[in-house]
Image (cartoon, rainbow, N blue to C red; front, side, top):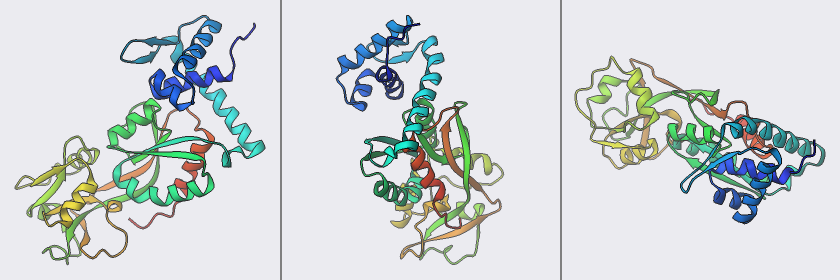
Length: 300
C-alpha cells in the first residue's frame, strides 16, 4: 500500500480535533487556513474516507474519524516522547500546553508550578483555563485542555481522576466575627449567621448539597457567587461568612481573614488530576503534570 500523506497531515488532523475548528487549528500549528484544509483533504483522499463533518457552525468527527483518532494520537505522542528521550528537545521546543483548573486550585497550585515550568521551558506558552468543575471536565474531555486539576464528583466517562490530596471545608470569616475564636463550628451554627454561598452551577454546591442533606438551614444566603474565590473577597469586605475548601484560604496568617474547622458533619473534598481516558500526554504536558505532582502540599 502506498501512503500518500505525512506527519504534517496527521498533526493537522489532531489540531482540528483539539481546537474544534479549522481556523483554530490553523492558528495553533501556525499555517494558513487554506493550507490546513489542503492537508485534511490530502489525508482524506489518501485514506479514501471522510474524517470530518463540516457545517458553517461546527466541525465534528465522522464515525471513521473517531475510530482513527486514537491511532493518530498514539503515533504522534509516541514520536514526541521518543524525540524528547534522544535529543532533549523539550527544553528548546516551542509550543503550547493548556491546563484547566477550578479557581481555588488555580490559586493554590498554579503560581509556583507555572514559575517552575517557565524556568525549565521558557519557549513553551502555558494557558490556564480557570473554570467551574463541569467546565474543567468538559475541557479535558474535548481536548481543549491537555489535563486538569479539579475535585472528584460527577465526571464524564471520557475522563479519569487521580487523587492528589484530600481537604476539608472550613468556615471563612473576619477576625472580628463572633465565630472567629471558636475551635470548631457546626454547619447548623454557621448557617445561623449571614452567609454567602456558591450558586447551583458550581461543583462545590453539588458536593455540599449531597453532604448536608440532614443539616437544617434556617435562612437563605445573602449572596450567591459562581466561584469560591469571589466568596472569600465578599467575606473580607464584611458581608458575612462562607463555607469554603481549605486550600481556597490564604496561606499563613492573614490580617483580616481566619478559617475555622467545620464539623457535624466533617465534609471533605478530593482534589486531583483529570485526564482524558486512554490518551498519553504530549511531552511538555507531561512535564507540567510532573511539577503538579511534585508540589509540596500544605496540610489541609
